[in-house]
Image 1 (cartoon, rainbow over the protein chains, first blue to last red):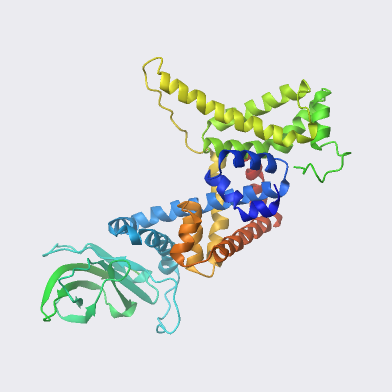
Image 2 (cartoon, chains in turn purple, orange; image 1 turned 60 degrees about the horizontal axis):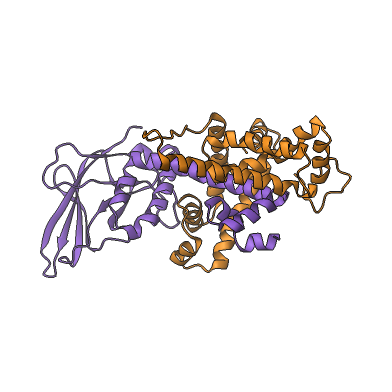
Length: 225
Length: 212
């Protein structure tokens, strides 16, 4: 067994996965028992695997606290894997967004990797207290509001309206479609919101332009600096 | 650890010399056997037990069995000592689970035995936190979220690499390059930590030795 074969057939990772046929596994064990190079690769590969799992477990717990995992679980299977990875690293990025000093937005001329995502829970009717709270002290620059929406074939598109506590519309956008995450996501500069209560309304709009409220998403903005 | 093809015969720790010294009753050679091959045996048992606590007993049993055979000069080709140890570890683990499966099937007492897995030991927890620290640095350095996704799906979700590559529109070569780069960088980070001369460097070296 030579190292080109080990590399070419991915024996290191397949060994850890238990994916080698028994005969090949036995041959590989007898090889690496006397091969310092393969032994080192095995130790490192196992370390990488254990480290990634430890990180995923830590971030998974954080994502669960943020409600991201429950959200992912409701998505279709086709987008779950990608979402899970995305959510883990969104969750991983949140502390830097939360605890770094507040920086001015500076426009969206350059990419940002620390934008916090807020998942809003929908209600039909008046839920009383808002279910989601956004603390501006923990937002650097921009924030993303996300709401889950089924792509209902009855509607040609969706319309989103954000209203303040007095019911006045602050933002409205039509002709929206759910993205690959089966969600509508609205990016807002943090300075768009003053502390207070808000409601995001999603309406399905048919071909004739008639809108039907699908759900409302009340949220509260605070500034605890 | 020694490669049987590259170590000079005069090396007292070469596989052949070690086997011969044990057969001659040299107690120090027995201790060297465990020092040099403990990690090999631990990796094999970890693989076959899935990291379960019985790996500790099987580790002891592997060396006990090997030493008894070596003392009686039962290893016909002493240069093949590493493979000999690997076979013993593997066979003991396989036999352990065969016996357990038989016991469950026969159900002699009529009582279902429930194996209660202990949680990871404190050393394992410490080692995992060291690996996680290195992985966090690696993740920070990766250029693309795609590379993170590949690592996560390959190592955590244990998806087939062909499927991951197909999902991401990558050729097998491109996929292997991403994984290879990540591994190389992880190795560098590990080595940097080892040679940094810090308490953390000494810690991870010790933990790797103790846990493998």
